Image 1 (cartoon, helix red, strand yellow):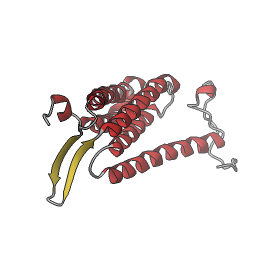
Image 2 (image 1 turned 90 degrees about the vertical axis):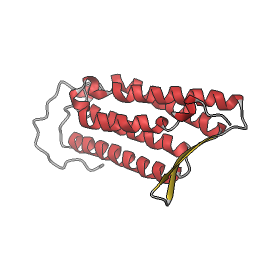
Image 3 (image 1 turned 180 degrees about the horizontal axis):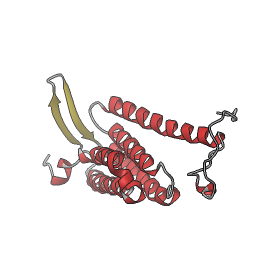
Image 4 (image 1 turned 30 degrees about the vertical axis):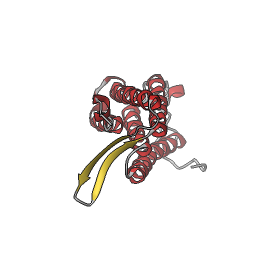
Length: 189
């Protein structure tokens, strides 16, 4: 089996959204639209790479892409993509790309949009790392749990602010300002 240049970039499929998470997390507030362009470009590149790999593997269904790198002489970190994994990589990256593009207008004006785009980039990286690899379950489980925890934490903070009478930052109530001190008047948290 002869490796093509495209197969050499297979490791970038989950790595690009992970790098987008880091960039958006640290610099997203200083960028327009909360740094949404960084995860969108990273996930679009992941989608293009995964789509090209999918097309190649569907044309030759008996082939697999396999790369393995030793790590600490005990564990091998690697990429193992068969035709089914390639289709899943394409689907996950495509749906995530659509979600990020839609969220640009949905999250516009929200004070937590940089955090949202960083967390969804982390979630995408975790989901993509879970679809291929020699040890995908640990990376996918840890990354997905962390991203879900961050997202739920953000939603609960918004819910607590909403229950305290603070409506600032909500898209449907942008004309109101938060001048009510925190009071626990919400029983459905």
